[in-house]
Length: 213
Ligand code: SAH
Image 1 (cartoon, protein in one colour):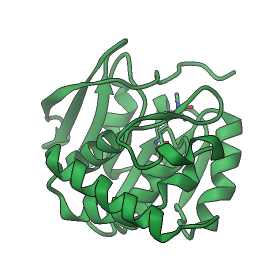
Image 2 (cartoon, helix red, strand yellow):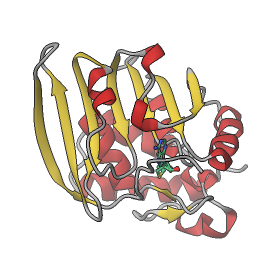
Image 3 (cartoon, protein in one colour):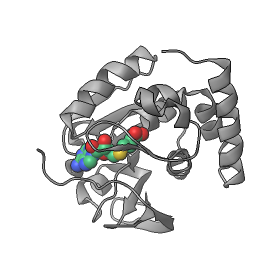
């Protein structure tokens, strides 16, 4: 598990690319500048770690494109110590970005192979979520709700109502909604009963799966 000057130099370039693509949140850019993304990928792909592309990880899943991670994190508007729920732990890269920004993180993964791998890997890099759960993101995490923010990192065919219900008033849900192509959607909870919805363009994600294998 090495992070060399070469990797660090490549990361600086990646941060510049993300800035050019419109990412403005300095805390997001600084987190991406620090995290050794190549260590989250299988060794064969290490050379591709700092281009702005999604890549395959285990269990037919992908590590999201850096721009997508940056944009979703920016839209979540996190502050230090916020209580955040992530749906789709995957490689743990998005989780690392959030932890680097000082949040209290709860994260759910529904594929056991990925859950086990990332559960061991993240703490080795010094990233410690409050809870990593093998479970179904459609139902959220009622026992730890409410959350300041919820981020869904797989394409949701519809908006799971439990996730809206588990937001604090003033909190936000960032979720890509759609089947083949998803619209990045933010739901802002204005009161117990009112939500404001805003859309932020098209993205492509692997699907949020509905039943467990
Ligand atoms: N945040 C991840 C992105 C991984 S891709 C990263 O940074 O690498 C999306 C992940 O969502 C996959 O790991 C997939 O297994 C997981 N997933 C799919 N359906 C899910 C569900 N219903 N509940 C929780 N996780 C789910």
